Image 1 (tube, one colour):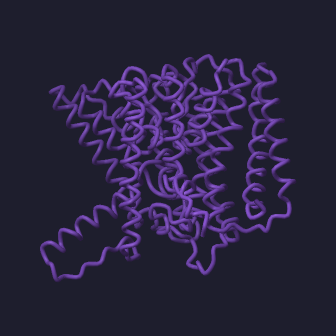
Image 2 (cartoon, helix red, strand yellow):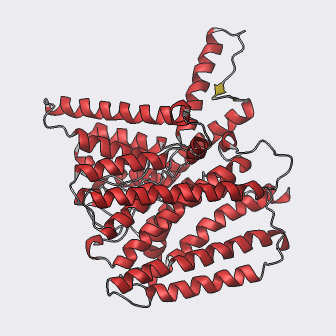
Image 3 (tube, rainbow, N blue to C red):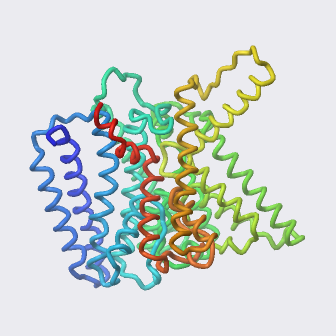
Length: 481
């Protein structure tokens, strides 16, 4: 295992960071007079394991090859989910290991599905820990999507490679500088979001936790009725704005600060993302207006909020949209699959893959009409070759296959059709709420069988890490390279 010392050293550092992060819930416990041993014990255990991992791998060579990058990606999320579940296990919520792991995995993958039935009366420390897990998961996936996944070439992510130098497989050097800038931008947006939440009516605690889950497009809330609890147009508008800011490529912020002032207008992925939001709002607005035969009874505010929340995989809700009829349910299911932009905290298939698939279909139609013509697919300033196109198509194909597989497994476990299909979609797309009586907008996942919770947890990490980053680890030939 000496070849993987860098992997295990990095895992140790991550565990130490996670353990130190538990100081924040401890401070919250002191402030609100709710101090107990749950986070103290969990923090000590996590830090001890982190120190042991780090000390036993101090002689690492500070380099990652391709195999190690895949292994680190998978183990990072898995280890954080495991150790992140300890506070839930040690808390007075009396959660089982299955429930604690589900909640932790939902947090770190920014999914937002929950098994806690009474959020309104839950300890403040648990609420802030849920928010912190999503916040850490958000910055984690941004850094990984921009620095590691392009080199791993997961599902076409090579398009977003930050350096043209790929003479060898050494991944770490330039990543540090990019990562630090991303963290500063991410933290800055979080504090700005908290500031506006506070101004528009949230108390300090709610503004802090909701800002973390908003920028992370995670969707964990402190209340059973989510953002709808506040019933404030200003808070919902703030949420919409910062969810969108968290769902566009964070590399665009770096380019903007580096002098490219038109990046938010010129970036094809951002433009398509905004167009999809606007088109979706209009479609649902006119559908609901047609159904009710009047415009006055249709809430544009509610439609806009839920479209943005579902498309980006945030999962905040203000109304039970499963009461809007059958078409909106199917439409929201489609939005779950599309997701936000690559290189952001958002989930799903991602806008750029949908764009490239569309260009591929148009190109194929042209070839049918003009058999001797030569047509080149371009995305931005890059040519899309056959190898790249195959990685996009294979990702989308695998995404659909895994979705149906999870749906089948859930139905075999006794869940009804709507719960099975929406549960599969919300897990692999990291959205949060599903559809139906149990896991609908204002429901939770507590009533599901334990087996279903483990299936959904697997779906969450597969969706969050772009499928191939996990599945490739189970191919023997990958380790023989």
